[in-house]
Image 1: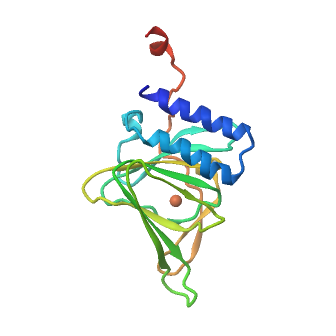
Image 2: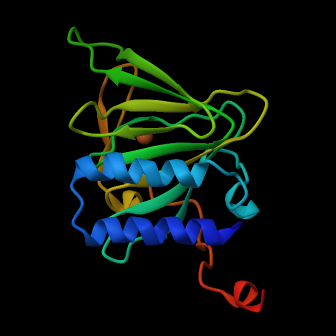
Image 3: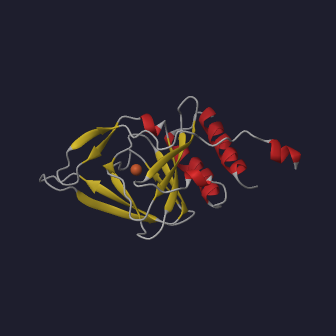
Length: 198
Ligand code: FE2
């Protein structure tokens, strides 16, 4: 199995999980297992969705038609990072290529600069959950200053359309944030001609 067949199989399995009415707990365990399978092999992400830009890119790979989940490739150019942000819905982050560092950011009870919390470094093949039930505010950056890193994320909704927040790390002030996506076209998972011809 190679190429987009792998992504298609993953999306089909995630859709079955959605159809089974998965709770957040099931998404974060069974969905994590599925994502672990997807990022175990780095041979399927189309090159145009793996290319770094002037800022990090958030490319939609698939959104469930009922917006129960979505799949996104995050492409980090050297040294690129997100703003401090939250999600408000569950998420799964799987490292496909390179490494990234996620740092929890906590409001300062005394006011002033936000305080860094737990720091996690994600290596290829690893999958971690994010959940508003545990802690939901972080900043994510490429662990490398000299190469691209790519992670594959799933969220419990259409993340590009979710009204959430970015935070000013100097003051903790919040601003409404609807991220959208960097790409205009999603991968074509449904041309089966090559497999059928084989
Ligand atoms: Fe995030």
